[in-house]
Length: 225
Length: 262
Image (cartoon, rainbow over all chains, first blue to last red; front, side):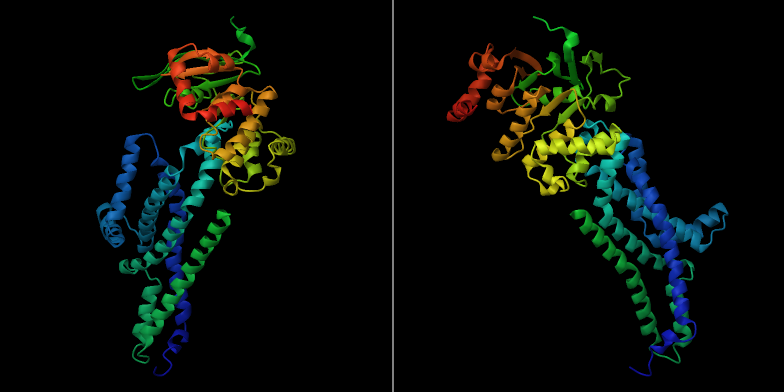
């Protein structure tokens, strides 16, 4: 290793800027996750509706979001929608929208799976002790569905966090972009700058996602007993 | 001799149920007096479980009347969740709520549906759990209990609502033979204490000893209705005779032994 390339991390504002870039990515992820949690439950329950047309529309929505790559959606929204509807969308808002739509679809599918995999008898047992349908959902169905979907939901959360790195391609200045800027500036003086900067970025993503999945394992174990 | 209908806990008149155009229950009439134990027997698929589920509104009926304590309960305006508080039902697949402790399972109905005070409900729940010998398990989770224990908890859960009548839908059918007895013992004690019960079962020995009346159903119709001794020793109809023959033939010694035990 030549002359202490690692110092590039600590030069000037580099590290602080990387953290700020991470904050941008995380903000997009956070907004999308919150919207997806709420919207996903609604869509998921709609997917269990008795009306064929409602199920159909939800299914179509889910499949379209899944088939088209997220990057294409980002481009379509940021470059396409804004031109066609003459609406000005910042790259970050466009990212919020795309990730929210994606998250709602995926979460909706998870919720649908968790609810439909519940044995019908649980619902009937609840009704048989005199609970209203709403009460059965609240005390029996939903608590169990939440436990059932937690692992997959956490997995979706970490996937969303990681996929936010794509937004660099529509010009959002997040951690990856800032990393590239730092490297451009430092590469002449410190040839190994790219290694170290990307190492930091790896580490940052890891330190965000790993505790989340650890926490989810802890919750799973608690509910298992 | 017709019972005075108003003394009956349950009155069913001409109950007909269709699945689409398929008629599965062809005009069933049944009267159950207070404190009476009616056991419904019949071959598989004859509609006995469906009939039971119609009584507490889990299945819809297309024609006929169901009266609980003289009040018609199968109207369009019926609030079934209120009616179900008076009709306790225990299912074959026990279905305790796996994310709650035993005590919480038992208390869910009384606290949330009947809105009773926690201390009072808890007292009753613990008393009932004690009676079936499961008070020590009140903080355990259903996954930690055996099938027989779970079923006994399911019975306690239904009892804690203070129902007027209890319905049992083949509650021992999924249990290992050793556990069947502990559940039947609970049901027998319940009957002795005067609970009005309608039981669907395949346990012939149990039926014979606990029933006040046997109702034999086949093809969605009540074929025969008589006192247990009469039914088992001298069935009136061919269908009933054939049904009992099956059990005597394959059970053979077993059937006679069951008789001796009772």
